[in-house]
Every structure is written in structure tokens, then in C-alpha cells.
Image (cartoon, rainbow, N blue to C red; front, side, top):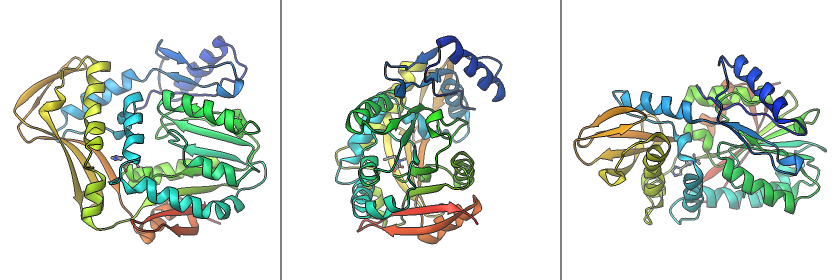
Length: 361
Ligand code: AVJ
């Protein structure tokens, strides 16, 4: 269970923030908030955001994941400061087409997307990272009043928010440090405004089917009845293109994958040797997804989070699924979560799609 509880802290004292966090934690079934609360409150009130230290749930997830018969870890832990930077580097490689295709598509359809954004709306982005693609929307839709970037990486969020505040002075920017797969509340900046969700990059592909439905349902709840959700998904394509994207020739994806082990070493006192593992990317046709694994090169033992884990030679640690969709398979998934497809746009090759979803009538 994710331990992150976040709220906007606009104009609140530290005591008030702690009270809010305590009651939120209580509502989420936790007895108390860990003391390691990080206050990321900067001078500008639009920057207020707090994050509860996530080490406890990271440790719990690592212990559970490495104790399982099929070892696995949730991909959200890729995104520490280094991992977020490495992901941005992946996006600039020739092999990882997803970002390139989607950015070109967004550039082409920005005006059309903007035409569907109501006056005074708040744009809510799930997993905003460096907010690079978002600028295409912000530029095309000056009628937006607020932008709520949500990201698990405080560093990435802080940096992006500072640059956006400088470049879009008329926009109220209300960042939320949160794990968007868990519970969180929108900041006051989104209150009383029509809301448009933005979920580009095919991140929805990281969920399994049920997880994706649950996320889309909760997005529907969070965004309200008048909402729209703009979702970018990667489409099924030839295996060679897919495999190259998840095993790029510069080895950035391999470093991104292994950074998870380095993070465990640093944050959970682990003794992983990243060189004892190979990066593996493979296409799973049954589940229509790319998978990333770390494959142990030898029989060995690793300590982390106060536990000992044994790896056999060739044993895999499963680190990520990236589901690939067809137009129909995604529309069906969205329908299960109460959304209808109002519009679909497809990029040039290698193809990705952008959907405008609206609540079922
Ligand atoms: C950011 C989750 C969409 O799954 O394609 C890139 C992450 N993993 N290369 C993806 C990722 C390996 C990416 N998402």
C-alpha cells in the first residue's frame, strides 16, 4: 500500500499541514504519519506540495517482490532523481519512438485538442515528469486557468514547475507530489473548475488490465462528471521495432533498468552488484506487452532492506510491463471504466494513438 499522502499546502502552516496529513493517513488506514515528512514548500504559494517519506512502502514492496516465487518490483520505483533523468534520456534515443511519435502527433493536433478545453479549465496531468509535451497543449489553450502536474519524483516536479511558472505567468501551477496509482486529492487550484485530464506517454500501459480500469475509474472520479481525459497509448506493432525501443543501442534503457538496484542499495542498504545482472526486454504476445527483466548472471545472494534474497543463475527479476493496444482494445478498456471514446488520433509510424475520453452519457 502506498504511503504517500499529499495535499496542496497553499498558505498553510507546518502544523496545519501535519494535521491534514495525519487525518489523511488515518482515512487511508494508517495509524500515523512517518516522521520523515519532506516539506517541498517554496516561497511562491503555487509551489506548495508535501510528500511523506516513501521509504517504508519501498522497503515493504522490495521485501515482498524479492521474496516472491517470480521476483518482481513495481515500475514506479524507477523514478528517483537519476531514474527520471535516465527516462528523459531514453526519450531522446532514436530507438525509443514513443515520445517522438507522440510529440509530433501532439504538435499536429494541439489546436483540435485545445478546442475541446473549456474556458477557465484546470489541466490535470498524471505522471508529468518534465512536462515537455504539456507545453504544446498549454501554448494552444490559453483559456486554461490552472495546471496540476502530479508526479512521484519531487525533483522532476520541482524543476518542471519552476520553469513553467516562469514561462506561463498567467497560469496557476499547483504541483502534487504523489503516486498517482494511489489515493490523492486535487489541490484547491482545481476546485470549481472544469477539469481536463492529461495522461500521455503510454504510461497507462504499465498497469495490468484490471489496474488500468481501476486507474481510469479513479481518474473519472477525481476529474468529475464534466471532465475529459486525453490519453496517449502505444499501439501494437512489429516486434523488431518494439524490442529495439526497450533495448536501445546506446544502452540507456539497460542503465535505467539497473538503476533500480542502485536505488535499493542507496535507500535500503542493499548490496546489489548491477553487473551481476543483464537487462532483458522481451515481447509477450499473450498479454500484448513489452516486458523488462533483470536476469541474474550467476547463483548469488543479495542483502537488502534487512533481508537476504537468493538468485539462481538465469533467474529473472521482472521490473516492468508496457502494454500495447489496438484502437479497439483500448476503447474496450476505457468503456469498462465508464469512459467513451469521443475522438481518436493516430501518429505517423511508428504509430501511437491519442484518445479523447468523455464520461459515458
Ligand atoms: C513512461 C512507462 C511509458 O513503458 O514505455 C521506457 C517507461 N520503460 N523504456 C514505457 C519505459 C522502458 C515508459 N513509460
